[in-house]
Image (cartoon, rainbow, N blue to C red; front, side, top):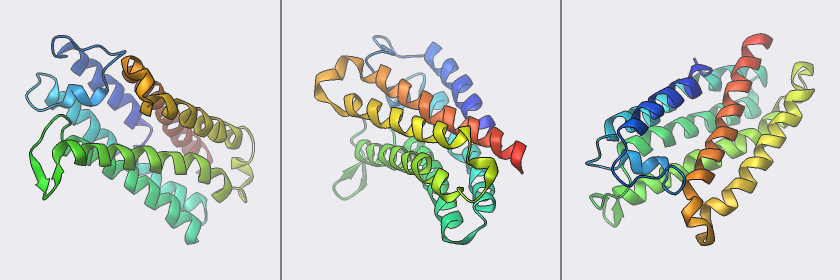
Length: 196
């Protein structure tokens, strides 16, 4: 199921891009702008976020099993749950909306919090999974270094994404972050299928 998450997200997002609002630039604007309330691409983009968040949940129980349960297994499963929940919340609370969710928190703020949840949880998954699975020989070879490399690449791409000096390239940096994180998800899900 998790192996389908990046494929699903990519295909639905490609359809949403065809309905992008006038003036939308994939280099400059984030994917979230496609999901903004009132845009013609909102339903598709929100379906991409939510569907991805649900499909990726298949990683949790399998990583838990591979880590042989315990604290490490529960931690990995919990991070997958937070990652998926963040994607679903990003769909529920669109960006560029000032509607109140809670006192002092707008939908735009909730969307940003959800985005932070996804980025931090997938980063922790990439960084901690190799250590949690270190006792399993099948996870000690190339995949371990692949996971650390994807973590490092994501961290490096995150810096200009949040930098004010690169605002005109923000969409490009976000898409690059999605490539590294979704490549990790797909590769790990395929590896889990082969090992389990």
